[in-house]
Image 1 (tube, rainbow, N blue to C red):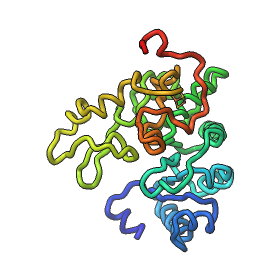
Image 2 (cartoon, rainbow, N blue to C red):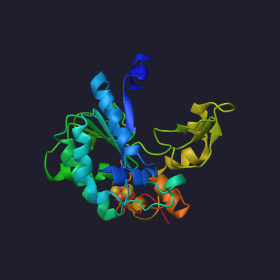
Image 3 (tube, protein in one colour):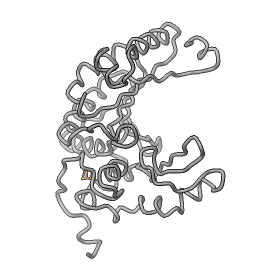
Length: 270
Ligand code: SF4
């Protein structure tokens, strides 16, 4: 199978790996033998010289097993590790995401790994990782060379990491998602329908659909996210806020940061 994919022109293969061993991965995937098949596919990719990407979802069930998971990913010789922070929507609705404390611990581990790993680490649905990185940069001159952010924008993110990023990409802000029937959403994890590519010009939807316009307005953010000095580069996961509260502008409960100052105090009257 892997050989035919290579022959068909595939230049990188992504496999999901969410556990550190057979019971943990198969239990999460609910498919016996999934771990063994994933390891076999990774071995085929290696034999064929096909660059390998691993996608991993972190939530409450595996947040404490980062060392084992990271070691396994590293052992597979990957070129890219995409790390998702669970958004409890769709089939993930019955699962618990990472707590704020678990996020901070994972951020520290990922940050440390990104500074030495010979592969790219990309973070998805944890925009507060940008805040974490900026905080690290503020305390030292550390610049993680392999760090990549969710929906990385080449012009905004240089080898100086996110220190130069003024506007962070987020749902509906530098990003949109089109599903298999053409429906347009601000993100694949934020089910707020804004149009359909069969009927609407995607650029017009991105520019003018009310939910897209609102998501790009930091003054719409509430709670700690609304008052946070990192709201331009972070803004919290709008998908998680919606999944947990029904309000896409609520604060992201997976972030424990308490803003230093209320950035809205001088610009917004309440
Ligand atoms: S409070 Fe909100 S905007 Fe500030 S760092 Fe946390 S998630 Fe980001």
